[in-house]
Length: 290
Image (cartoon, rainbow, N blue to C red; front, side):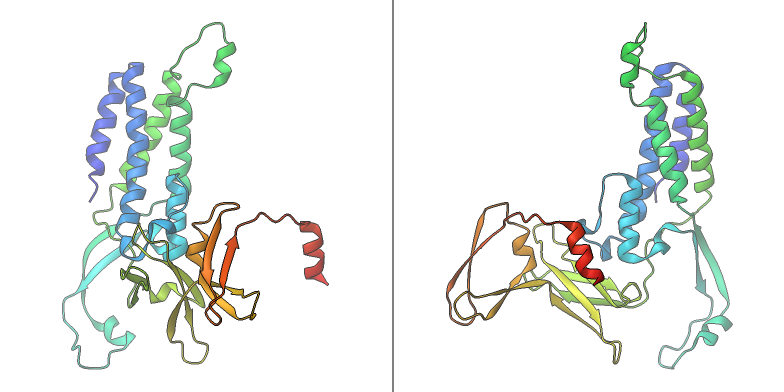
C-alpha cells in the first residue's frame, strides 16, 4: 500500500523551507503523489484490465477508462469486513444468511474524489511546474512561479492527501464471480467480472504483444455468457463468400498498405488496402432520420 503519510511529511518539510526551489520541488512531489494514488488503485484491478483498456495520459482519464471497463466502484470509498462465523459452503445460502453473520471490520478504502484530485493536479502544475509564455513579454523574466500561490496550492494538496490517508486499506475491483477464457491467438487468460458485463462487453487480450480483442455477449434467454473474436466479414470478389478476418489485423494496417488474405471458400487471394473515405456527415445524419 502506498505510504501517503511519507509523501505528506516530505512535501511539508519542503514547503516549510519557504525558498522557491524547495517550493517547486514540493509542488512536483504533490503531483507525483496524486498520480501515484490513481496508479495504485488501477494496478490493484489489473487482473481485469489490458493496457488497451487504459485511455489517456492524465491520471483522471486513466481512472475513468478503468471505471468504464469495471464499474465506478473502483474510484469510490468502501469498507472491507470479514465474517466471524463461516458459512457452510455445502448449503444453499441467501442474502439473509449473510446478513445474520457477525462481521469484523478489516479497514476502509478512501474515496478518490476524482474531480477534486484532477483539479488539484492541474492547478499545482499551473502555478509551479510551467513557465507561462506570457512572461516573455514582461520587463523581467522569472522561470519560477509566485511563492504565495505555490504555497497555497501545496497546502490544498496536503489537505487532500491528509484526508485520503485516513483510509487504512487498499483494494481494487471486487467482482464476485469472474468469466474467464483463453485468447485464441496467444493463449493468455482473459478475465472479466461478470457483474461488469451487462448486455455485451469488449475484452482485450492482456498480453502486450497481442492485439486480439473479443466481444463478450449475454444471452437474452438464459443470461449465459459467450465470447467471439471481433472480426470483419469481407466478401470475395469471385465467389462472394464472406470471409471473416480478425479485427486486430486491420489495426496493423497503415494508409494504402496492403494485406494479403485468402478466401475461405475458393482460396482466391484477396488484397485488402486501408484507404481514407470522406463523406458528408450532414447527409449521413439525414439518411438516419428518414
